[in-house]
Image (cartoon, rainbow, N blue to C red; front, side):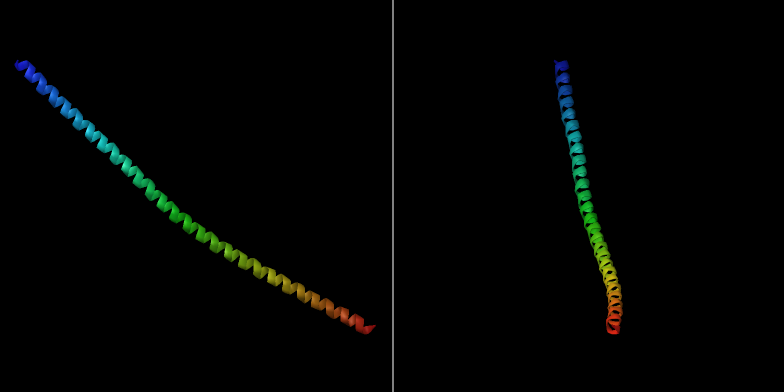
Length: 98
């Protein structure tokens, strides 16, 4: 009879320790999962912020490029207008001589 009681106590202790071990393992895995989710969310937030800053920098560079292009076009047009004016002076002189 004493052997049966000892066996039952050992069985109960083994079951309780197995349940406790499973609980600790599951808790550890859930914490890992929560940490992974947190890291992924933080990475997404950082990536979004970086993407916004890159877009802003690209936008500013594009505006600067367009301004420079407009200035170059204006200079080119001014030179062409001056050449046209000089040509018109020559034509005027030729016409007045005739």
